[in-house]
Length: 132
Image (cartoon, rainbow, N blue to C red; front, top):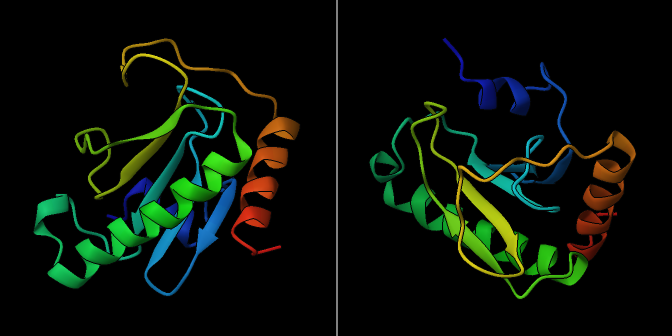
């Protein structure tokens, strides 16, 4: 059965897409820890990040860096935190989370962000990546 991320990549479930190439897809988290919280997902459906082949793993890190630097240009923050948790969805992925203080804590309350604001942030990140 396809993961929720495979369904997002296939366009079966809508997303606030910020990046896509032949191998990777990135979109804003709909329950973010902070504004600009994004996920980077390989299109290849593999459950555990360390089961990815070497090229896909390295490509995921390269894409994550590119996207993190674009988010940093758009969202006021001290830095972009990166996390690989991996148990909530059986599809390898990276969280990119703008940080203003402290550390990443997935038990912190999630933000409720209006659709218009999510679209605005996604568009600004795509522009920063020169995709718009």
